[in-house]
Image (cartoon, rainbow, N blue to C red; front, top):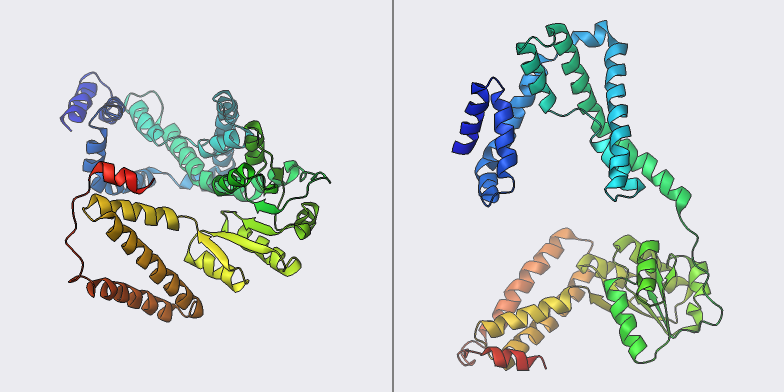
Length: 386
């Protein structure tokens, strides 16, 4: 804070604005080792000071100019925004952004910045511009700031979807000679691991993914995948799912996953579906469709971390494994119970509370019979996972 005040006073002593001095002090401190401490210190005041700043700006705006010179104000604001957008768009391209990212940059930053108000006051005090010009410019800047969120929403909800719809590539044609035993829908983090294991055991599979970028990335690393929507019946038939044995549903997007599961269960009921679930809600939706083999995506890794944590806390390898195994059995039972009452939020909440009490009681019963946890060395921890 002393640095900020010192720079602000220094700026005022040379005839510049204290606000400019505070701004420069912030820039200087942005890369210092005290940055996070400073941010934490000023966090409680940011909202209040920002609100006061905009109240002052709003009170200084001469709204009568909208009535007396509406076309001049609106035209100047739009002209300012267009000029900045025209400058920012190529800058985005030069910095490596794609067309969509450059367009978003131009839209987000096309308004005049808040610091313009400070510069106008300095210019007015120095008699560089007149009071009438200052009022006009303040209204123009304010209007540009008000229009930017609207323009951003228009870009995100109207312009971007339409442009994407025009450039969406066609789904890949799957070769006729493909005769997979497994079809994998979603070839991201989960699907690729499944594919690598299948490939290691010489099990033929066909991988599908809705992201053209993901498919291109996979192909660059020497693996084969096809671009397509696994919820489309024509694509699944082209992938010869009716001749396969297993459909691995590894899509991370919940609505897309459910749509694909619906299509497969309806048109290929004989296929074994093994699904990745994002959470309990997703698992329940899949269970409604008759999918029986469901793996929650972070569940097993969380259990492994819990087991490591118990062992690091001093529990033996056997105790840690037994605890995690019993927890897993209990949680899977609770998942089935919650599926039966999934439509009733009150019963669902009560089931969760009952499950917590049951689990505590389950381990409390064994507390007197379980030996004290022993200290486990790092070597024991490493051997337990071999």
